Length: 79
Image (cartoon, rainbow, N blue to C red; front, top):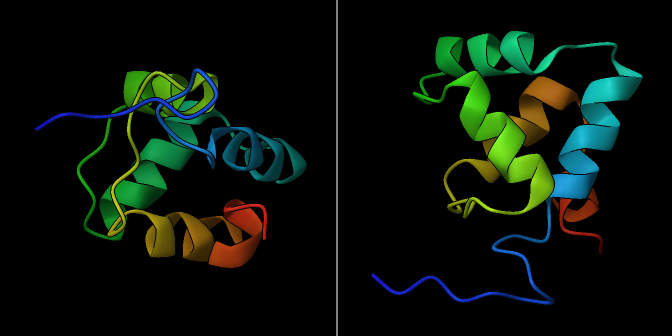
């Protein structure tokens, strides 16, 4: 599968995920653990890569990030 870059990044939600996580004073490890509780198998290093834009974020992960971080999917997408 070919993953394309958008403005040099593999996702557009990483900056917003970091912002929401930091507002909740949650570590990357905590976020990964909460995602795992919701059924998404993800590790701390994957959260780091999402936040810096080097990891693709599949559509099925966005609603879970939204739920765990208590923000809307539209907000994560910058809409």
